[in-house]
Length: 497
Figure 1: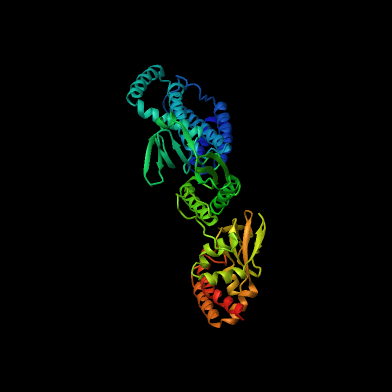
Figure 2 (figure 1 turned 60 degrees about the vertical axis):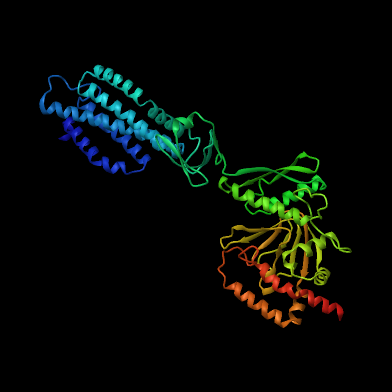
């Protein structure tokens, strides 16, 4: 029987292992590890039972084909041991979830294991003198090390960087010396970085290993932005902090958690300097968001009648308030883009139809799918427009601040609100009630026809899924303007009656 011939049985098991090698390499690491351990245990027991020890060469008396078969079985045993050790190393990297380091560490481990495999086969199986080979290899290694000092420095620095993992592909980093951008490739020799101007920088790994690395994407992709801005010193610091905070939150890409931080940094003879800090989702947004926030600060300051630059002698104030008008009402009617085309008498009439209302942080002004009863104009503060998706998730589609209106398209079209409007900050809004607007539309049929045409035109525009009020954050201002072009004349006529 075959079990009475251990060497033949070992040869058959070796043939099975050789035939299944290609299949096994395609299996998951854990499967390879389990099969490898089981196969090595069975193969080793059969070899030892047949008198074959992989740790010593065949007996000197054994020559010819038996000796060759003996050596092939031992070599195959060492090959499976090498593959098992490499698989163990890969399994360790998988357990620790070290995706980026796996290729580098596995390649390094495979190289070391295969070198050991060659020396083990030469000394223990083929009975060759490896002392001279080791000495010769040492001399060659020294010569090559001196000749390739720079390359080897990059190589081993790359290994250290990938094992330690201070950055990964896709991270935004800054290196000592000014190199800054997104990591697009890490190889044995260098790291490739793409800058914000779409230029590729190739930095040797040895240089990176010796420099200070700032990783903007770790431990979190959230990135902070800081800058200073100065306001007129006639504005109380508490009011300046509130205004800047509202302006920062007006930018949709600014995170509300962690929220913006504003503090007074310095006083000067004619200005107060504020330190502004806020956070965005990722570093690639910082440049554009900073520009947007500065634009919102300018807009909020102008709306509130506060100068960014201190007025020179003889310069008129930013906001001119007519006699008999309250500052808030004048700011709204005189500054809102919806009213800029009205004559002074028409603006006075519009002001009479508006009612003021305080706005608390967290208050809901409109709910999605609810009927719109008022057209709101924001005088101060910031609101967030959110939309509930079909899958139940809620996304923020826009933020609006002083001078913006809310609900124009939904109210004038008679459709429910497509978004929920919630106050992010305290502030004030003005309302134009639905009955007033309906009275105007009934009294002016030609205006209703104009609005119907404008709404039909809007419905033909492609929707980007933002809100029913409308896809473009400020596109409904165009619809509202057609309404306000005649609202003053209507109220003047009604007062005369």
